[in-house]
Image (cartoon, rainbow, N blue to C red):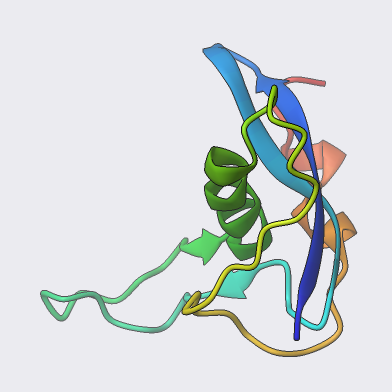
Length: 99
């Protein structure tokens, strides 16, 4: 079973808050899809999905900030098993437009 620890954050150039993964175990935080093909047969050249963040965000919908729900079990999410590291989700400062 994979476990994600999440927190609520704001984002540059976006209104509102969302949940992101600040820790994960049992899953890869990123799903590198580069080299695969999309539904039209085109090769994906830049697609790295922030899977741990996506699951954290989906769980955040059910946890509702004011309801004090501390845990959500998510079933059916597609992820790559392995030792996770939410640090993989932090953009390299050399490629970060906001620093």
